[in-house]
Image 1 (cartoon, rainbow, N blue to C red):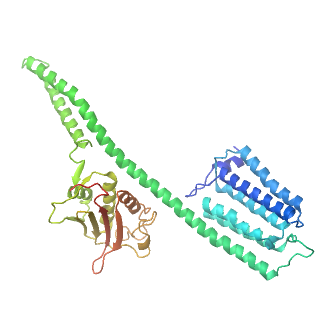
Image 2 (cartoon, rainbow, N blue to C red):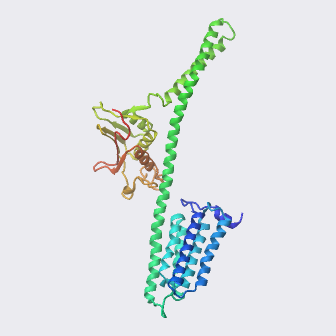
Length: 438
């Protein structure tokens, strides 16, 4: 494989997915069309003196590059930084050549230096964007110093002061830096959110798959019940027909025991299914016990507080996303609690609310405003791990929040009021959101 082909197939490590070749080609065709129209208007309609031949050759070169790219590479291919960076740098050079022929920084189209940098910021890595931005700034400075006169009607073209041209270069440079950084940050946040949502979908798909396996197990148990009953009946008849000292009596007894064991296994599988399973719908108190049970054996006291009057207790469908989301919040609370975690549930005829509290260090001030965003670690785990330990990717709370919000929940996160310590997460639903039953 050639070096050029390698550049088009190898991607750098990181969140950047590269730039699709078809997108770059389409954008360049748009630039070619705009440049051609601009040259036509200035030279033909306005009648300004313009080196039209060299300018059209510069534009035609971009068209040739586009045709070569389309002929040489599949347009659906994504370009790595190594391939896309030089192509965008070529666009900067092509714009520089046109500006050199048409007045340099005197030309108001000098602002188009921003375009390639914005494209890089949206699709490529930060390093590639910085290099391209510096290259664009250098080209803008060069064309500001060396250029042909600005095309203009009449005998004398306006001559702008050098200080004004220097200000134009500074303005373009600052715009490249500021808008480039802003665009890259927005694109990076979008990529992080997409990655985190993909992780959430994976978790939810796994939970739903487990629920489907329960249903398949119940269906299999139901279908196997009839032939197993027939086998049990035949074994019983054989056992009656054999004498006590028959050499096959022991084998028949073993077969009977194994049939009984199969029946017990099928009975267990039936209890896992979803159709008419006893836990397909459950009161809120039972659901909370299922959520907290896996976290009770870690040296942290977990208490569940319910209203004294439970006549109107909600009955919920066993939703994998709901159970996993609540379980993730409880696990997070247990991780950071000093001695205990408290769950409090309350409800009215129209709403339901669950509060999860712990007595740990609470949320760090520097991340308290960003809790729930992907790749934000909620609390430093220096209590148990040491300050140098990493506390994870910061996806746990984001996944829990996303899954619970899909059930119609609203979440509020805050530190507990002094003198209490720790964090508090409040989750509330309208009863209609979960199709609850009284």
